[in-house]
Structures are given as structure tokens and as C-alpha cells.
Image (cartoon, rainbow, N blue to C red; front, side):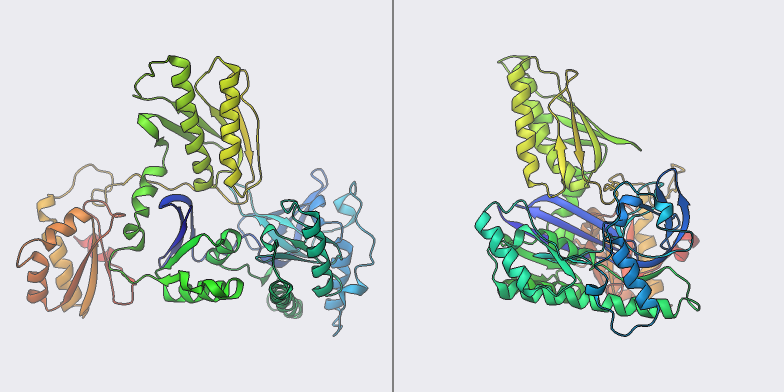
Length: 529
């Protein structure tokens, strides 16, 4: 299986698509100004103690306070507390080794005995805000890398359980013990298997630089807390692009395409650090078509998201999102009946549903509880076959999950790690013109409207080169013939006009872009028309 990563950077959003054998396997999209990413570390203050929950709420700058449970303080919280106190006292040389001798927290303790309102805490986001809930926090600070996770305030070294060889586990433990600084522990990730000490040492030094940079920001935050009250961001996780590559990167990647020069350089720098011999796979996309249209991602997004998802031979899934769980219903649709009988037909539909559902869970990043209503099957061996198929399909999923066999009602229950909200991409197109009234101006006049915009850009706004993004059908209409409408407009209004078909746009929707790739805001002109 080959994999490609397609990164679409827009002024307001960044979208990342992972293609496996040209088929969309994972998709992530987030706002570029989003600051509440998993992994960010804040110096913050406790807003409220909740003894009944054995937890507290912490202000990290989100509209809803973040949640910190007693168990998330971590066994080494007293060492972290002492370390922060020494920084606050202005000590120049604060050594972790002098702090890690503090007693560990009791597992059955109470949070009001540890924290009070306005207590200063160093916290890290482990779950982004979901629905009405604020971020979830921990005081167990970690710095994840490609091969290692650096863990301060402890000397413990752990090795991924997916590394089965006892000899390799012992080798990695010995290597990390020889290169890690005192006062720090580490978690060895699965990708470190077989790696040389030089590669591990390089990453350990890079992670230590992140720690020292964070400590400097903590000192500045403590010193400036009067002028700039807490919370303050003291460590920002790598960009969504780099963090996805860090978790997913493998040697099967054939290409990583990026349509933005700054992000291209960022990705190139990261790949050159973790795989210097693979930098040639990072490529800057400079084509005329939108990058997702060029690699057939837009069409796959529109067909893969939404309430109804069709798969083999007319069968389909209905996926519903609720506050508590996700519900999936399997339907055979207009599928022709199998001559071998209803039982065989149900098994084929269910096995196809299991294949598509495993893909959908990764694609939408669905987490929490998922309940699947498969088509009823009478034979126990068929139900077991379906369960084994689902378990096998989910082996490719990086998120922690648990799958239960079908219940007597034909329901399969799945739990999957939830770190961020499930992807909910709207694939329905709303009318860009009528605003919900159901009435629009004649579509025959659409070209007149467009020419008016081109004239305004040229004569009033003094643009000399612009790109016009349109629905592919409209783009083809403007470009047909000799001379085409596009050529006539260029000569008439003395402007260079490039027409770009864009599958994201609906039939009478359009967008103008300047030579730098920034969208030209035409909203006021649209309202006037």
C-alpha cells in the first residue's frame, strides 16, 4: 500500500488529507487561528475547586474553563509544584534532580488538600473542547517526538508494548538511559524500533531544547503576571501539519504535496530532521487547479461525509451523531438478493459495512461510544466472522479502541479514543444567491454580474491580474470558443483574468483571488447587486 499526504492551506483553514492507494483514509481540518491544540502547555490559575467531583476548573483562556481531575495531577505533582515555586523565588539554577525526591501523590487523595482557588499550575491540554465541555487538562507534562516522549520529574523509562522483542526492548532502555539527562524519564515509541543511538540522541536533544524554551517562558510569565495576568501560553505544540506527520510518517509515503510555501518549508524542515534521506518526497504544489481538486480529494470528501454513506452494490450506512454516542445503521438498499439466501446476503452486506465503517471512524475521527446496528444474522459463525472482520479492519487505526461481539439484538458496541471533536464536514450546498427565499435572478444574467465584477476590479480597484474561481460547468462556459468570453473581458477591461474550475463552489458561486493567493472580498459589491 502506498500513501500520499495532500495539504491544502487556505487563509482561514488548513486541511490535510491522507490517501492510501489514492483513496481518502484520513482527513483533518482546523482553523488557522485555533490555539487550543492538544499538547499546548499553559501557566494558569485555578478558578474553582469542585470537591464533589474531586476536580477543579482552570482558566486557560477558553470561553469555558478547562477541567482538571485529581488523578490527572499525576504522581509527580509535588515535584512540579516545588520546581515552580523555586522558579517563582527567582533561583537561577533550578535542578530537577533536587525536586524529584518529593513524595508521590496518593491515588485516593482529595484535590482540596492539594490545590486552592488561584493556585498557580502548569497544565497541558490532553483533549480539545468538545460540544459544551471545555478542554481536559493534565499536570503530567510530556514532550512527544517521532521516536521518544520526554517526561520531566521522573527517572522512569518505558518502552511501547508493541515492541515485542525482549532483546530490542532491553537495547532501547539501555540506550535511552545513557543519553537522557538526570531528572527526566522517557517513553520509547514503536517507531524507535531498530533505530541507532545517533538518531535517538538527536531527537532527545531537540526535545530538551523545547523543555528549556518552555522554562524560559514560564519565568517570563511569572515575572510579568502583574502586567499580563495568567493564563499564559508557555509551550505551543507543533502545527497540525507537523503533528500529523509525526504520528503517521512512514517509509511508504510516496509524496507530501503542500500548496503554501511557508508550510512547505516547515514540513521540509521536519522531514529533513527525522528522515534526511526522504526529503525528496516533500513537494510544493504550484498547479492551476485547487490542490484538492487536482488529487480528486474534493470529490471523495463530498461522497464520504454526510448522514448517508453509500458503499458496495447500493448498500449504505446512516451515521447519526448525538451528545452521548454515535449511531450507525446498516441498510442493504437496492442491492440485488443473493441466490444463496437471505443469510448469505446479510453477511455480504455486513462485511462490506465493516470495511467502510472502519474507514469512516478514521476519516471522521469519531470517538467515544459507537453503536452499530448490523443486519440480523441467524448463524453464530456468521456473527463471529463479522466480529473478526471488524477487529482486523481496526488494526490500522492508531486510536485506542475496544470492540465487543454482536449482542443478541444484533448490535456491535465500539469505544474509540476521543481527543478532539469528530469531523463533521457539511457536503450539502446552499444557494449562494437566494439566501433561503427560493427565488434568484435569472441564471442567464450571471455572466453579466461576473463581467461587472471584473470591470470593478480593473477600473475602480486597479487590479491588473486576478484569478476567478467558478463551478467547473461555469468555468467551461466562460472558456469555450474563440474568442471566449474570458478573452473578450480581458481585452475590454484591460485585465489578465485566469478562470479556475473549483469543485467546492456551487453553481452560481464565485471567488476572486489576487496574485498572492489572497481572496478579494467582494461581499459589499455582492450585496449591492
